Length: 96
Image (cartoon, rainbow, N blue to C red):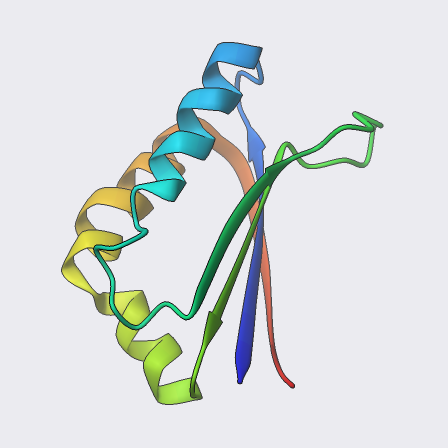
């Protein structure tokens, strides 16, 4: 199992923008069959080091994660949207 975690810091972190962005992330549910788990959470601490939204996804294999990265919905809908609203994006991928 591969876990893919991405943290997003929005350029304009208003409540409305955070909600819209989280909802956009969740539109992947049911559209990308490689996803074994999809979760998007909003930061509640709001410290200086906090990011606004965390995405956690899980895949059966590293090959599935790589296929997800280039999946048309992810590559053409999600990535461009996230790049347009975020000031910083960081990720970590690990095997469990």
